[in-house]
Length: 258
Image 1 (cartoon, rainbow, N blue to C red):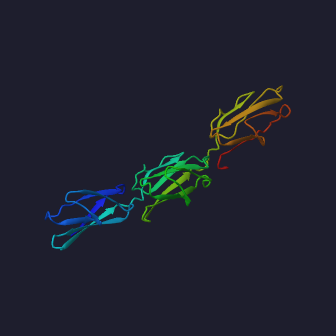
Image 2: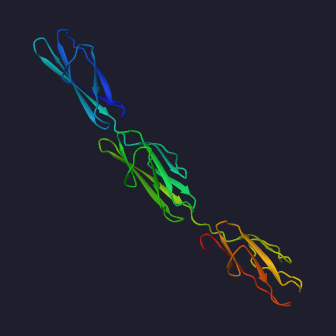
């Protein structure tokens, strides 16, 4: 007399067809008088809930049998899709995987998170903000370079059951490259020849040369260069009198301040 039917979350109705053994018996399905073999559509409760269907068969003498079919509609608190821009989810998105990481460059201060629901009757929040399915949500500001920012996507099924997805956005650390890419002088020749790992050079010029231009380029475009204390990549330097030396200091500061 009792049966259970399990259906997917997106099944909103079922059709019940029943026939009494005795042709003279009468029948109701959920209180609706129904003929033998007649198909009767039954609307289901929302995803995550059960719907009871009662079939009452009444014999000619008034005796009754009640059959109960319980239709369990699966809950759905899963995402259909999840993207972060800029960046790529790792691992690739699947509805059953709830934890992800995204790596972005050190200069990225915000990301856009877009999540879509499998069940349009479910609800969702991103970092506590109510968000509709497919709505892009900007996460800003991200934690500083070298740090991670946690993004939480909470999906609530119609029956109140919840699933939480986590995305950790890892912002790259500032670079530590404080080397020069090139170093040139307008007069004379560096000795030894330039190499990024060599930090001391001499240049011999004729007595009549009163100035020269020093040009220096950093390897990391995010690094800064100063020549004799002035923030510049090229500077004309006045030389001391003939027979004397002139020190020129080039300081390269990496993005991480080394």
